[in-house]
Length: 443
Image (cartoon, rainbow, N blue to C red; front, side, top):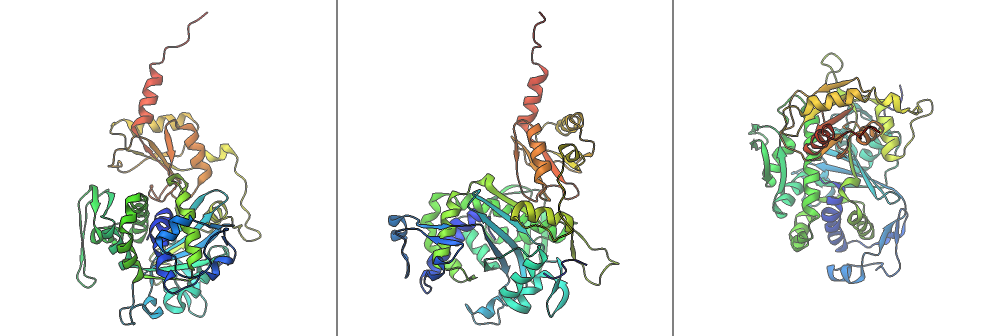
């Protein structure tokens, strides 16, 4: 059996968390690691010592990334019995796990969400959930397990962030705007957790944002949480990209100083920040580790069981990691892409939106097209093509057929399909206009 061993969209991470980490680490760490590949020090950049904000902007961002970099980010519930600020404070199970790739060749950031219940074999521990790796062996064991699980992907650095940082950070930036698709009510006295959110477009404060991502009282459980984490990361990215956030930098620093542990140096932080400033929203790709929930008869515990062939395709497409020998990925011809399972979700405001899209796709040769159980409650102007399991080939093929559509690489689509098409108003208007086009005159 092969390969049993093994919070922040990255522009938001770069503009907020990494920028802030620069200042935090500059108080006590040199930039010596900045001279080590994959990070490069550009001419004129300071080599050692603290870096002030004025120096940073007066001298320009003189750091860069010389090759793709892979970083593991873990959200940790702090161990309250350990001394504050000590490494032991981060000895806990990871609530969130992300593998992030920054590629300077394409100016793209890829983020893989790893469900915390993913079934793995932890060395000297045995088969258990991947979120236990940090508890048993800290960041070194956690990165080892993640690497081995994901076809031995190289991992350059790690960042551990306590979950309290996220809540406080949202409050510092003045809240984040998020669309809540359904009513969320839940209370757990033992965790001091109370969630009470109404559906609609809301500006969430830190406590509400934490409830939004921790809500599990639905059929999707932890996978639904992962979807909402991605939604909130995008919202935080949008907020942190606002230049006005620089005025709140001192407060951001104060929050993150209490909640961060990493082996990134000052210079490396600067390199990440410079790269993050160049990344546009459409260059941010977020995917979910493909798999399924285990059945009650399979194991004693409930796991997320990885779909290895789909994982192989994601690791090759987004992280440039080939599958093991003997498991090579076959090239797909365009006709085979029409076998993809597509779910159509109406977000146009027109009751006939889904019906028109399904008929159009069927006329284009797609035969595995289905209607979503529910409409998307948020109205969209542009149609979205969402490859929730990372199937870029099928998604791009679809997008080329849909005028006025956008490719949105994230895992918020219908999970029982390969690609979700959310019908927007612009596409319907274009289709309607074509129906009334005057045919060319006969000569």
